[in-house]
Image 1 (tube, rainbow, N blue to C red):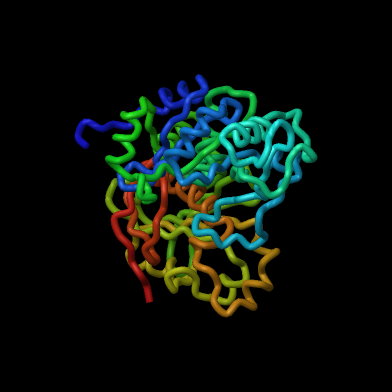
Image 2 (image 1 turned 135 degrees about the horizontal axis):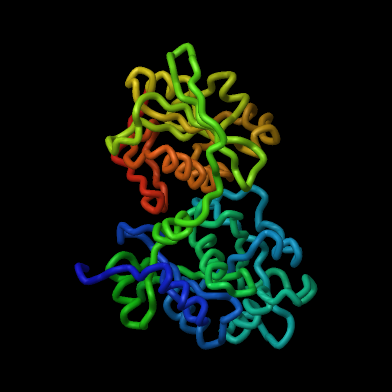
Length: 367
């Protein structure tokens, strides 16, 4: 393992531009899963056969919302309960020059046709053997997933069709390849290997989706805080942070990222980890140091009645906007200079945080 190293994003992008596939890991702790990713327009029967042979066999194709709407491909389900909220649409096969749709030849034709701007909705049979995924606008900066990495890499490569294919790499026994196994696989097949965390860092060097709009001191019933507002390029709604004390000194900081829910906030309903926004703010005030990030949710008003009627509201990590909010919250924390967090709430997995220069050192539940 000591000799193993990830390739730079520039090297990975060069491979995508040349029509070759790469291995992308979902984090850099070397214990997570990896996907084979390549530009959709470069798919051939040979490359698809290789992917099927070394993967789960479920080939997905990341596409922009605009392109999916053009092809009239709706979400597969209206209530997505998949663990990572991967945005599956209706699966398809290309109708022309194919047979059953399952062969490597047929799947390659379907993939290229999905990426071809001349293709029409009527060119595809539904359901099929290729699974289009809806890319989250903003890419890995808002959702640190392989779906977003695929389109981001194609975009960085300057290719005309903003669509990439992805498939999880597995061992012969069907278990997921991880860590050293992924490096060995990449070496054996001459593939470049990179991480989503590095892709986040690469993009953050030149772009962000949130910008600081203002800051001022405010007095609350819990004492003085600094209020900092943020504009979001992907939403008309503002986000803000309440900061107490010096938080950019590298020491662990008490932190809570809270998704605004007007009804729950007003009624002091407990959210993920048994916390209300007031409880989190009080704990930060008691420590005299910490940050509460409050994120806007475009679905706040629309889902208000459903949330009130629910006997057990979903955990924050399971809500439809959760992945996007992780990325927005991480951008705000990075802008505030926070690098090490003690999270107020229950333990859960946040992919790609290292790409924002952030490390979680602990969790704290507050009664």
